[in-house]
Length: 68
Image (cartoon, rainbow, N blue to C red):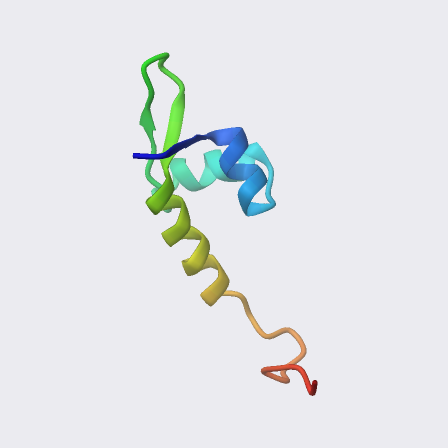
């Protein structure tokens, strides 16, 4: 199982470490602890979270897609 530390997960998501921690604290993202006691996020959990966040992004321009 591939796991990511919070800072690495944040980099992959393009957000801050604190944003990932808030997601964990709010139950939107599950974390466990590695052998050293640091919080880590399972890779498949991170991928699912990323997809869910992308699907939830609002269409701010109201156009739905590019004209290209």
